[in-house]
Length: 148
Image 1 (cartoon, one colour):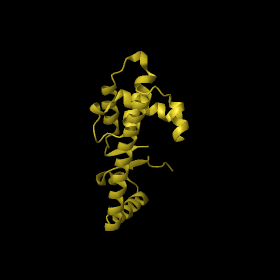
Image 2 (cartoon, helix red, strand yellow):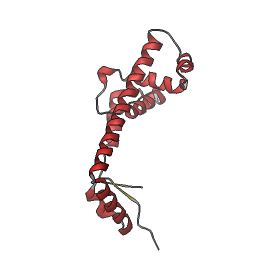
Image 3 (cartoon, one colour):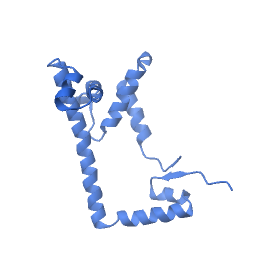
Image 4 (cartoon, helix red, strand yellow):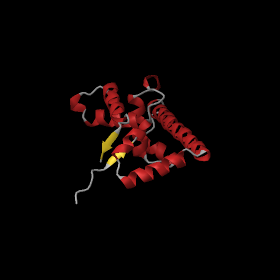
């Protein structure tokens, strides 16, 4: 018996492509998500994630200041605040490539980080950071269905 290909339904319209069992689970989840206390919790979680994303960029801005203006190394900072130097270095490079004046409020840190990583990884291609970010954001946009 051949199985139906897996489908990721990100919109209610895409649920039509799901199998019977998956549709039943999706309907149950949808009704649970519609409950008032669940909606409040989801809203609270969304705000916390937004706060986390903005804090990550602000942390990176402070790391840039400590490295560029005070000439500290990521390892020195890491020892003081008990954080891994490689993460501080990643934040540094991300926030240097995308300073506050170039950032958009609704773009998460991970998108900036991925764009920075790609530009640095493929230096020989001389990629434009802004163009790489645009392409990443285009890929992240939800589509109606996505086969897995």
